[in-house]
Image (cartoon, rainbow, N blue to C red; front, side, top):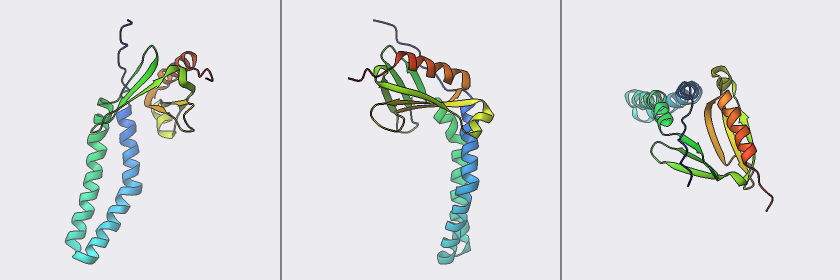
Length: 161
């Protein structure tokens, strides 16, 4: 029996990427929503209650921006084993996905503007089961993502059966 390969972690810049993404979401979505929710509550219950609701929503978003990305990073692991790709993620609810290598149809690497700025890429693994990616590994260095893409493409392959 072959030894179990070590679990691999994401690039450490994943935390910065996720914080930047959450900061953008905070500015574009959370703050306007908090203002509208606070105004709605203030209309019904008074300005103090409206301010408390708005401040609470923004505070929660800030907490998620600061504290959640390191936890996501800590609990995301993947391993390329002899017959499958194993991906683990989730902070509160853990999910393990096993993607058989012989079912992989194609593997992509993708970069958004923030990923490109940080020198990161995400790996998307597709099988015959659908049109969306069956597995995703975010925040890999570009060289690791490309190497993993090439390895999985070489080792994978649906035989059409």
